[in-house]
Length: 143
Image 1 (cartoon, rainbow, N blue to C red):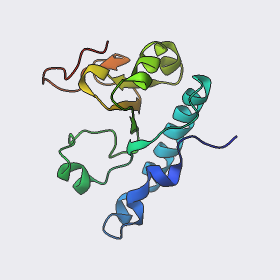
Image 2: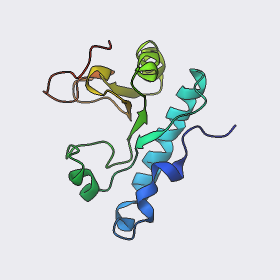
Image 3: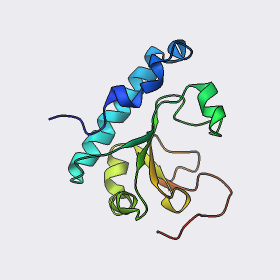
Image 4: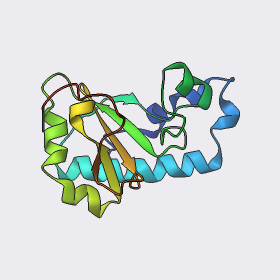
C-alpha cells in the first residue's frame, strides 16, 4: 500500500547543499518512524491524501520561520499537515485521540493551529496527548 505522506517530501530540505550535513542518520531514522506512525494513522482514519505544510526543518530554516528552538521538526519527530479553513482533519484527529496514544503521538491543540495539524512522536513536557504549544491566545474555537 503506498504511503499517503512521503519521506522525500518530508525531508525536502536535505537536497539543499546548505543543510545536507544536518540530515543525519538519526534525523532520517526519526522521520521514517514518524511517517510510519502518521501513514498508519491516516489509513486507519480513512484519509487518502494529505499535504505536508512543514516536515523536517534544518536549524537555520527553523529559526528563519520563527519556529521554537525546541521544535520536534528539527529532529525529524514532527509534521504539520494542511487542514484548510474548516479544521476537518484536526477534528478527526481530536475525535480519535486513542489512536494517537496507541502510536505514541501527540498533537498541538487545533485552536492554536488554524490551517494545519501538528503531529509529533512522543509526548511534550506536559505529557498531554493534546497540548497548547505556546502562551499566545488561541486563534479559533474549534475544540
